[in-house]
Length: 499
Ligand code: GLN
Image (cartoon, rainbow, N blue to C red; front, side, top):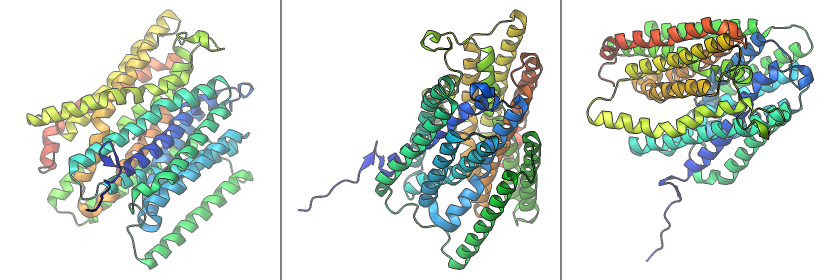
């Protein structure tokens, strides 16, 4: 008789999922912990340990940084595919992220702070898309439902990080010293790396080899990467030496046009010259609509770190538990946790809902879910519109309930739109363009994040501008959502049998 040992598992899933779950937990911890502090740090007076920039500049920096994080996912995926595989990408990505956070913790000038943000964005671009791909690789040859459930667990890791980080890094940064907050983000990423190293044997052979095995192509790729790095270093050095200066709002505007141009050129190219048949063209048409809606959604949703952060700081009564803090108020950053808390609480309900509706053949199609997501986004802004009017009428602050309700509505929107967007992009894409179109999904997120920063900068913390701006956002969310719902029958036809 031979003794057999069952392979280690994580709640019935491959044990490697736990490795990636905790790596992503710590990475998101560092991302959301720092992000919660970013706009507060930028706008805080120098005497209070901040950089003392105006709202418009802070919003632009927030938009450029968070937009770049998602844009860099494109080269990040390419590096893993062509050059080093997903596993090394995660490892080096994590090291780069941690270095960036440590630089923020010791930085004293605007220039070195920007360098730190750039480093974090580059590292995140390398880590974030590839860790999801590696989760997928763990489930190769396993049933689809098992894989979906693996991804749901993984998504919990993301949100656990997003929930705890603002409470830890945010509180430390806001109440004691911003730099200590950045330090905790760096330490979190470091813990993630240690954990990854110590448990990576559970991943087996997954993610070691790049998809491309052609040595000549690899050499070409490495040269290209080397060249890009050299150009990047030259540009940064020149800026450091003061050879040119840039203003954040101008860079943000240029960046926006660049992202738009990439989207127009790419979709135009595959529609006109991609050799697609009629069905494929119509499906790509649906993807363009979903792409635009996704960019719009994130443009509202990601104002969490810009507009809503300032709303929490200046216009929300934070006296609850205030006696525990020297300022007499609980930290602004705590509100940043609420989206993740809602996701953790609501995701199982939504999973159940879609499944239950599916059993009755009532599962809404992707455009319907996107439409609902946008309506929820608009509804969230409507709540803040009332809150802003209340503030103007009473002259005081409003209770936390308003902001919490907005976050709740936005989270229900996220749950309608985000998971479904990812999977419809994989299903609608013609196979030979699958990974490029996945990149387009990230590009939509990048556009949304950038716009969220720009809009946030425009709104700032001046309550007088808020009613008009929040009204725009409400109309834009509800209007686009309803329009999408109206056109659903056409889009469904174009989807050609895909749900
Ligand atoms: N909260 C999710 C994450 O951090 C999704 C964010 C997004 O796609 N904009 O991964």
